[in-house]
Length: 298
Ligand SMILES: [Ca+2]
Ligand SMILES: [Ca+2]
Ligand SMILES: [Ca+2]
Image (cartoon, rainbow, N blue to C red; front, top):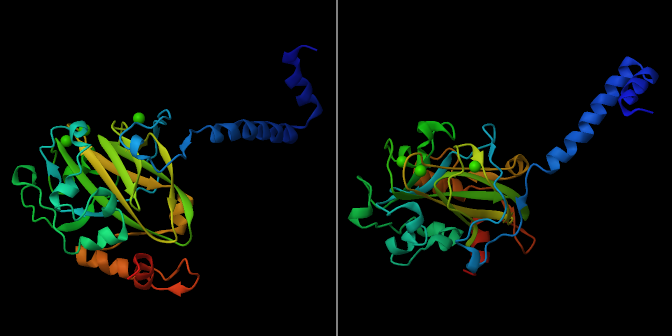
């Protein structure tokens, strides 16, 4: 039997409706592998010390995701680190550590204990590296109404500027998870992204992704029951500059992320105190503050 006759024979033996069902079924079967091979998820994190400044080994996804649930409200220093000499040159220096006399550093800032220190601890960038108007305090960092707001320059716009170059920014969220769980974290940055969660580094990518909604790597991360702190540093050299991030929709249905409505530092810490009651690792219901004392042994 010639192969090109096969569809005709099938069509003869099937009515129009069955034929439609057959075609739809075939399309669906072909679509499943397309979903499976959408791109690899990085599952090898967190990064070991030796790999902290290395590029991901996976190939780039290059996926534009305008409809993802981009996180637009963050918390962070009231200034970027200016005159950084270019994002790559600056990337290996822990400016948070230098600006807090070692009271904080980037990994410890991504812990509840470190985050609470920002109630008091100032970030003192030397005058040459401070933005105009910097007080060294911490503030709500808003990226605008969309991930591609401000012409793809939300590292500048969050501080009221149009288009700065050669600087680093840090932005923080707290992710309140109901249980220990995995989540898929997806950054879109220009230029250099470094991300820590709960004291460990999970992502390092020295290259811009291509657009404010373009994701190059999906990274599986561990969230623990209760509060998780994520610190997202982005280094800018020139041109566009943005630091966007989303999680998978399943995660977003389960977790609560702050800052939510907070417009001030004080309101952010009010949101932190009022996060949902959690089950501690000792198996009893405790409030956030009791949980914090358990974890820190206070
Ligand atoms: Ca890309
Ligand atoms: Ca850039
Ligand atoms: Ca710029």
